Structures are given as C-alpha cells and as structure tokens.
Image 1 (cartoon, rainbow, N blue to C red):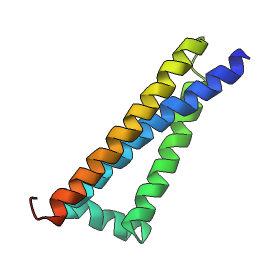
Image 2 (spheres, rainbow, N blue to C red; image 1 turned 60 degrees about the vertical axis):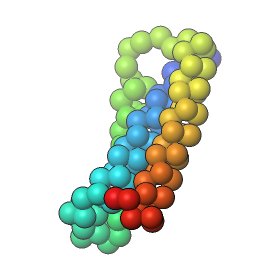
Image 3 (cartoon, one colour; image 1 turned 90 degrees about the vertical axis):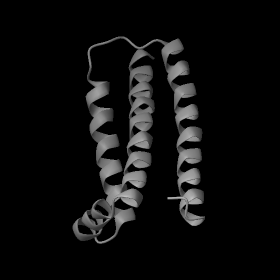
Image 4 (tube, one colour; image 1 turned 135 degrees about the vertical axis):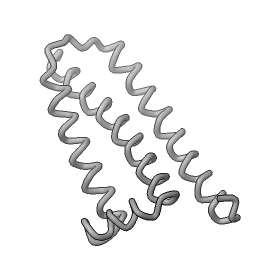
Amino acid sequence: MKNKLKIINAFVLSAVVTILFIVAMTMLAEIRPIIKDWLKITFSHHWTGKGILAVGLFLALSLLISFLPQETKEGAVRKNLFLLFLVSVAGTLVILGLYILETFRFI
C-alpha cells in the first residue's frame, strides 16, 4: 500500500508542477511572441509544443519523485490532492483572465 501511495503522490505533485508550467508558458507565449514563435518552429504548433513539453515534464518528475527515498503518508497525499485542485482552479482562472484582458485589449 505504501508503494501505491508514493506513486500516487508522485503523480499528483508532478501534475501540480505541470499545470504551473502550462499556465506560465501560456502567459509567456501570449505576452512574448518570440516564445510562441519558438514553439511553432520547434513543434509545428505552439499548442503541440506546450503539450509535448508538459508530457515530458510530467513523466520526468513522476519518475524522479517516485524514486526519492522518503515515506509517503495518506494525509500527505490528501493534502497534495487538495493542492492539485487549488492549482487547477487558479490556473484556469489565470488563463481565463489573461484571455479576457487580451480580448478587450487591456494588454
């Protein structure tokens, strides 16, 4: 059971970091066109590029965290799942706010 908790916790923490990465990349790509252009040139489309980078980040972090020599308790997993929920909601609101500001030409 402890091994399952460790893997679940690794996935949850990796998802938190990956969401933060996607939000940051989305904001940067909209504010700094050079980043969006780099994603297009490198991956053929900026969405594809963010997706490939996000999957790579998620997989690498999941492996790294799951191999760390620390014990994972059920309470820690619950707290991290709540953190994942909060980061997901906050990330959604940040991206939504960015596009609203951009749509109405505030940026």
